[in-house]
Image 1 (cartoon, rainbow, N blue to C red):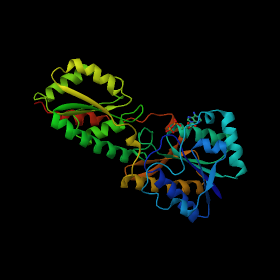
Image 2 (cartoon, protein in one colour; image 1 turned 120 degrees about the vertical axis):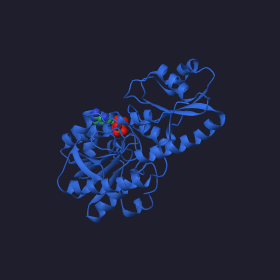
Image 3 (tube, rainbow, N blue to C red; image 1 turned 90 degrees about the horizontal axis):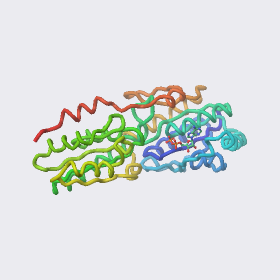
Image 4 (tube, protein in one colour; image 1 turned 90 degrees about the vertical axis):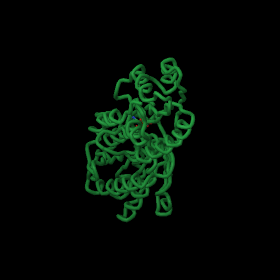
Length: 324
Ligand code: ADP
């Protein structure tokens, strides 16, 4: 193992830089040359890369985003597209590949590994936490904290004006961010794609919790089956006469910012482990975290299964409903 290629791919997530730093420093310490391809698979196809050295990763542990850049690339989904990348990787004599990203990125990594016969290690990096086989993905903790901070602020104005606020959070098709932040921000209710939403019931529920028309927060996952937060707002309006309703879409602020200590530690441990796994001759595995331990599982298993949030937490939210 003399040269390892590294990419960040799919949506960026806070902590990706901490992971890049760990991979680079770990490689250099073991006499391996780390090559960082720019903008995910796009850089691989276009042969844009950097021989990463210590100076490249100085002072990046605390920075959000990814210094390598990231992208979505449809060409890489085709065998012909991947053939360009394979030609470039072969001419650089790359003999190992570490991919930091989400399940789409892992599908690409797996295809590349099969077609080129190169060992690959996948590291889950996405704020959505929607990866099977790991309790935590890099970036999720930071995104949750960003949401909680924003909701705390919204609660100040919601309380002052006696308003009900619907707050839409990210998460793609999964409700991890919504469910966890609903608990952490003391929300009255939460709508997630994993549970069928009933707007009439939500209206009844909000009324029973708001007899004095005080404030409430409802966290809405962007992928909820009842639609986006604006649709839900419009459906709720006629059902909540006499109440003042507002909605807010938190958007991309959730993707940025300084990674939390948790994400920095997770990312660093995963980065070091990925290099060790390549040196041990492992391939086509993803690193996951369960409790405080890291483990591996086949990439095929993670991409063929769906991660589900801890649904018993819905009961926690329901248990805390106060009838005023
Ligand atoms: P994420 O990795 O966060 O799930 P995407 O699903 O957008 O994000 O995937 C990132 C990139 O991975 C895609 O733009 C594409 O280049 C590559 N990719 C996704 N799915 C596949 C696939 N089935 N085969 C090959 N490459 C894929």
